Image 1 (cartoon, rainbow, N blue to C red):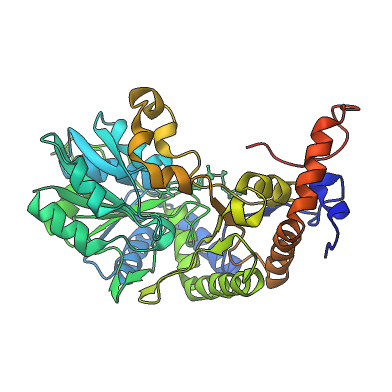
Image 2 (image 1 turned 180 degrees about the vertical axis):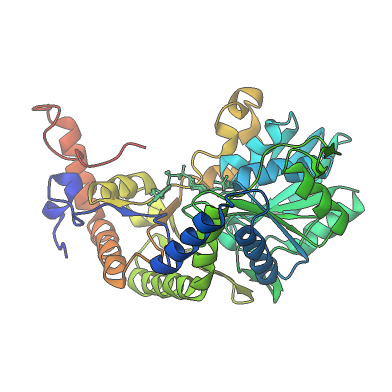
Length: 418
Ligand code: T4K
C-alpha cells in the first residue's frame, strides 16, 4: 500500500497494480457449464433463429423481471431501436442527457429528434419536472434511463405521460434484477430494454432484450427482430435482423446460474468501498436507496473539488497511472457528442445538473473478478491522493513548470488519456 506522494505513479512511482483493473470486466460464472452448453449447440447444429437456449434465456429473464414477454436481441442498442419503431415513436422524444450515447443514437438513427432533459442530481435519473417543460406538440414519447440500476421516478413519469398522452419506455440497460419499492424493473412503461453487453452484470458477449406485458406489442417486436417474418414466406412488418444467437444465450444462461453470486460480489465490493471511503473529504459514494433493490453493478463516486482539493479529472489520471481504469461515465454528456453538439449547440443551457454531474462522477472497478483487497487498494490510493491533495497539486504544478526532458520520461506515461 502506498503511503507517500512520491510513490504515486502520476508523479513517477511504479503503478500500484501490475495488471489493469477494469470497471467492466465481464462476470463469467461456471466455465464448464458454458462449454457444455456450447457442445449442445454444436451437437444440435442449431445456431440461431429461435433456438432452444434463446427460448430458455428469454423465459428466465421474463421471470426475473416479472413480465409476460422477453424478446432477446443482438444488443441493447438495436433493442432500443426496435422498441421505438414498434411503438411508432416519431417527431421528438425526451431523453436524459446523462446516459450512454446509445439511448439517444437509437432515436436519431431513425430520424426521431432526441430532446435532452436534465436529471435529478440526487438520483442521476431524468427529472420529471423538467420533462414536463420540454413537451411540445411534436413530442411523442419519453425514454427514462434507470442509471446505475437505480429506478427512475416511475410513478411521476407514468402520471405525466398518461396526462400528456405520451408513450413511456425505459432504457433498463443497467437494471437487471433491480426493483423499485418492491416492483421489479422490466414491467414499467410500455416496454423496457435490457443490455447483456460484456460489461453488464449478466453478459451474452453482446446482447439485449425487450421486456413487456403487452401481448400485441411483443408479437410485433418478435417479428420485427426477424426481418418482419410472421411465418414462412410472410412478412407483416418492416423488420431488421436483431436476433440473439444460441452461443450468446449459452453465456447468458451461465451468467444467470450465478446471478446471485454476482450481486453478492458487487454488494460486498460496494460496501467495502463505502467503509474505506467513508469520511474522505469531498468524495461521496453514490448510495442506493433503501427502498430499492439494486444489483450493485456500478460503484460511483462524486468528487467535490472544492472540498477534496483535487478535481475528478486529476483523480482519474492518477488512478489510470496506477492501472486502475476508472471511468468518467457519462462525460461529457450526450448533448456534447456529435451529431447532437452541432444540432443543438445551446442544449447545455437547459442542463445545469447534467453539466455539473459529468464533471463530478467517477466510476470505480467492481464485479465478481474484483477482490476485496483490490477494492482496498483503490480506496487507499484515493485516500492518499485526497489526504495529500495540497502536496499533489503543488507537485503537479512544478512538473508542469519544469522543462520536459524527453517525451517518454516522467509522470503520467502510464496514464490513459481517454
Ligand atoms: N443504454 C445504456 C444506459 C447503456 O449503458 C448502454 C451500454 C446501452 C444503452 C447500449 O447497450 P448495448 O448496445 O451496449 O448492449 C461500455 C459498453 O460497451 C456499453 O455496453 C455500456 N452501456 C457502457 C456503459 O459501457 P464503453 O465505451 O465504456 O466500452 P469499453 O470498451 O471502454 O469497455 C468498458 C470497460 O469494460 C473497460 O474498462 C474495458 C472493460 N471490458 C470491456 C469489454 C468489452 C472488459 O474488461 N472486457 C470486455 O470484454 O461502453
